[in-house]
Amino acid sequence: MKAIIVTQAGGPEVLQLAERPSPQPVENQVVIKVEAAGLNRADVMMRQGKYGKPEDTPEILGLEVAGTICACGPKVTHWKKGDRACALIRGGGYAEYAVADFRHCLPIPENVSMIEAAGLPETVLTVWSNVFQRMRVQTGETLLIQGGTSGIGLTAIQLARAFGVRVFATAGSDEKCAFAQSWGAERCINYKTQDFEKELAPIGVDAILDYIGGDYTAKHLRILKPEGRLCWLAGMEGVKSTINIMDIMTKRLSLTGSTLSPRTDDFKAQLTADVEMRVWPLVAQGKLKTHVSKTFPLEQAAEAHTYMEEGGHIGKIILTI
Image 1 (tube, helix red, strand yellow):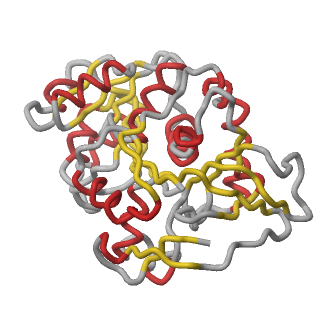
Image 2 (spheres, helix red, strand yellow; image 1 turned 180 degrees about the vertical axis):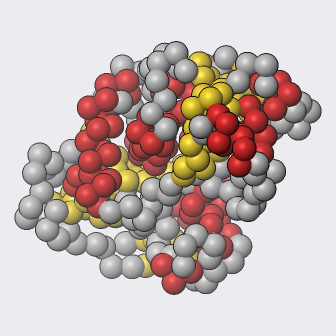
């Protein structure tokens, strides 16, 4: 099969098209004939050798795919050859075929294209796990989403609104702010021209989903309401922060964070099952969507990574196979 491999840690140019053996399913795995694969920030960090241990970076990147199941392992239940599925995988998505734990697959509704479906697993599972399971955001509370027009951000906006949560967001341009508001944010603040702390301090927020870190942390602690929660998905502006622990103590704040990729297969299976029951009906009803910024053919994976790193996109970037 054709696949994009990481030849060494480095820039987008280290991604090269190569031939690799097609995967075969074992035990509880299915093989998916991939039609589309989503790009994620974690892919970029893996390519750079900055995500976990460099030696743990898979040769073939790609954490989410959509396509048709073409083979099933002996322990696979309720999936069969020919089923349309999207899946969260441990790597290997930038290829014509990919293997997935059958418990990590989700059915693709008829009203959702393969390209749209490829942008759902990573964002939906991440948001559900962190916003609704880890931070336990409830109806009537207020959520701040840093980076409201990222794939994660747009998913978080839609899910929060669907469950009756007030949503505020930030973005880096007036165009992006308008887009976030058109997708359900009550207000989106341009962090390049406005101070989100000053804008939100009079209101206060109950929970914050953040992947900026750095100097933002102190501001977050100040705008959180009593019993507020802060959850990190990354630290793009720095993994070290100076905090005033009195903010935490006096308001009884909770600080948490997670990464989805290294979690166990059993954890991901439980999370996927919860998402299929609680969230997937929204996808089938057209109430939870993927906004695709741009697609690239598999052979142009390096160009797709460059486009992601430029930071001008809104929503998801998808490779088509």
